[in-house]
Image (cartoon, rainbow, N blue to C red):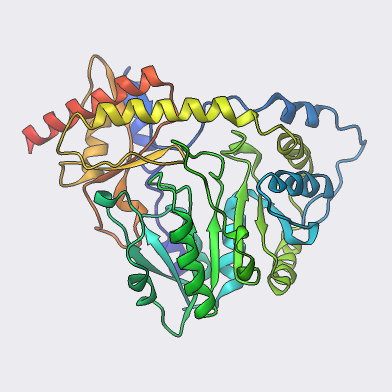
Length: 397
């Protein structure tokens, strides 16, 4: 029997594809520093678990397809901190931010339609585009400029009769770039001019550094009909396994359609929604120490890696990732070699090869993504291991 073209063409995850190699490495007795995946080590707020433990109903029944009001109300109050006014009807609760992206892709276009995305981008956008039969039209950004957007005219050149949306992620995964208010407003003007959706993945909203403020597309009043926002508690409240996210829009037609998709999968999980509601009720001060910790980690790793002047790296402005351009020819081979054949005193590092964060194979084979989700002392060791690995790898080449 033959599987579908979608099944054959969907991308392997660059974040997870080396996991079997890492398992063998650890079985051989080596220690592996996992910098490949954005799994925070920050403790999940205890309020999340308390909310679940306090559930007293005798039957765990189906909930509303678009999510429970307790969570929606908690999110509405959360966004009020940023002077963003939402109503319950603007929110659909999803299985993580992933389902929100998938819903959005399926709603904004038909098979063969196009969505413009600055690259490198979150690797799973490739998968969602394959599943919805959309074509990603990439806009290249460069390590040398901190992966900020090119001139807006370069983006406008990509628009065709089949273009349906522009998608941005800010703060960005995989680069840590925070797009400025000017950049985002320029994109909004293009979206408005060409009657496009502007989809914004804002799941790292809280994590910006050096006094930089995250600017949300929800703050642009004239784009009320164009904007779709992807939200999630996974990284914000260190609750990746809860799988609670949201799709946010003031466009009534989009909300009518997304409810049908939500009904088709019945409902999001009730207990995790209650836990999520409890986290959204936490005071804004909850993030203060967490942001300081991530900024310290960023600074530590940046200082170590930039000791090698051949590494191209601008200091990331947000999230907890960096995308580094290395003096190696093949980051896939380099990442695998580090796990299979290299160690320093029995320790090595797992990173995500950068090519998987692009729309086409063979792009930017000299880049890696690092998630700085370990404490600073471990990051310092891991960074030095990477530097030594680069030296040894280039010797063998």
